[in-house]
Amino acid sequence: MAWIVSVYDFTLFGTLLPVIAEDFGWSTAQATTVNTVAQVGVFIVSLVVGSLIDRLGRKNALIILMLAGAVASGMTGMAMGAVSMIIVRSLTGLSLSEEVVNAVYLSEIYRKVKNKGLFYSVVQAGYPIGALVAAGMSALLLPVIGWRWSFVVAAVLALCVALVATRLPESPVFAAMKESRRRAEAGDEAGAARLLDEHELEPDSGERTGIKDVFTKTLWRHTTLLAAAWLFSWIGIQVFSVLGTTVLVESKGVSFENALVILVGANAVGFVGYLFHGWLGDRIGRRSTVIFGWLAGGIASLVMLLVPGGTFFIIAMYGLTLFFLTGPFAALLYYMGESFPAHVRGMGTNVAHVMAPMGSIIDSGLLSFLLVAGVSMTWAAVFTGTAGLFLAALCMLGTRKVEQ
Image 1 (cartoon, helix red, strand yellow):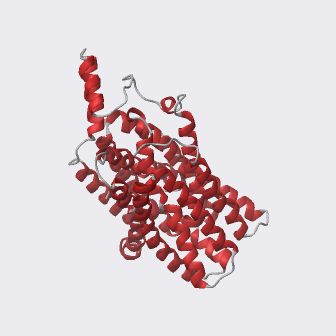
Image 2 (cartoon, one colour):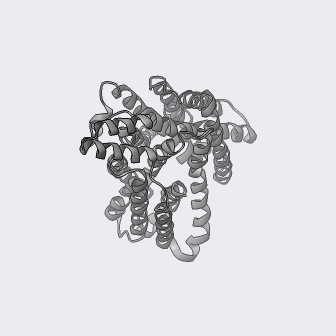
Image 3 (cartoon, helix red, strand yellow):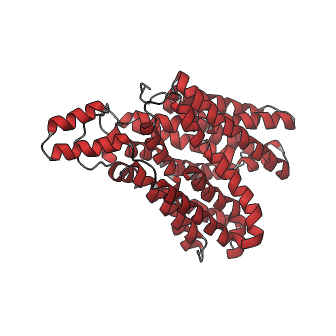
């Protein structure tokens, strides 16, 4: 529910941006500039999430992020211009980071569960559901209540999820870490050590965690490569998912109406992709699943862009591209929760995750540069989206091997 509502707000803004731009009198260039600058704000705001998770707990972090999402959604409906819109949309960096809480919290809740990757993939598959709900709700609500009240509806949904989240139990791993620190401070070192051993946790210093703690001698390479994998994979997301209709129209000559139909169908295929990669990760390993998926996605996108074919061929290859582009995130996020020590699990997962908006920003600039330089949309998509997927898979090869 939390992830669906977070994605709902995120995609609602993109869906309604043309309407918002018309209301404020922005040109297309001004509207995209507002969105790009807001993405920089999202990156900055997202940096605090790791500390929230590791210091306040997984459950409390979830509640705080959903409350922040409610505030951001509600205030979007109150924006008076470009500056206020940028500030407000920057706050969505908190609600978008909700998937980091999911990855950390559920990796600890599911520790003794069989097929845990498949269970988690159902949660992560909330992304296409949220995107489709946003499109459907926009079609229903926009003519009736307008774009401003549409965001108020999103705020109410986020508040409801925050209220339900108060009924969740805290992660037993975080509870054990908190209790072990209390015992150690009370002088019961043996009791603290025994509790950590029972929960198979690594001892920590008890000091406040920071970004430096995920760049230690044993973790810096893993953290750096995970962050790079997120950055490059989101270049692919920006090209083939966010700008999918533009690529299909400009590169393959598909009509805009047909491109929308293909996009909806491909998102449905993407939903199945999450479940498949979650299931596969339980069997061959989550790290291997991510590498395989992004390599297959890169190949599928290359075939779609460079091999001539009819409408059915384009639909099939675009569907496969999204299947192997988005599906591996179900395995990736759970793997990230497993790959960091418990006391820096939130920080490590979030440091990598915040590179997603940076990937979007870099791709927007690089794609624009290539097109202005006279490169065709086909080859521009190859040099950005396809190359991003291959580079992301390459980065994953250097990350830590984790015993599941």
